[in-house]
Length: 168
Image (cartoon, rainbow, N blue to C red; front, side, top):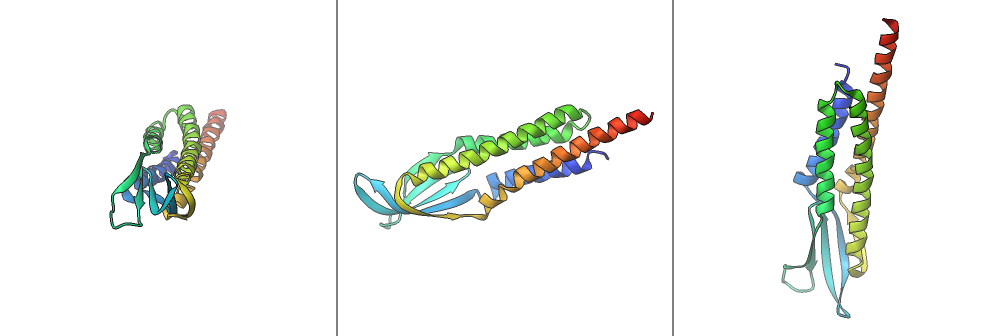
């Protein structure tokens, strides 16, 4: 049971990524005046991990004016899930597990960059806007924390096994 702590941390990362994709994928809402051919209409934008829709709220029509596919955010979340699952099952090869966990941190940073870029891109469609962040955006801070804890656990196990090998 040497790998228990790391597996739990990686499992928490998996569950949070799946929760982002399946549970409530909305991470922010923008509301303000939409720029359209020098005319400004009141609009709302729902930023989700899978896609983003901009709605015109000045009329009763609830059709989306702009729909942006967030495929890079979606793929990054699935890459985090796949790498975490691989990391859980590679408990015998700790060096590879450590390398995969390091890649998880890189994908966490990529996810934060993509979310920031997507929010700014949709914000550029508005003349003035107000952003309301959903709790899902703040749960994203959990991902790098659990991945750092998993890396610390793997390094601790490597040191422990080296110490045991010296005693033999």
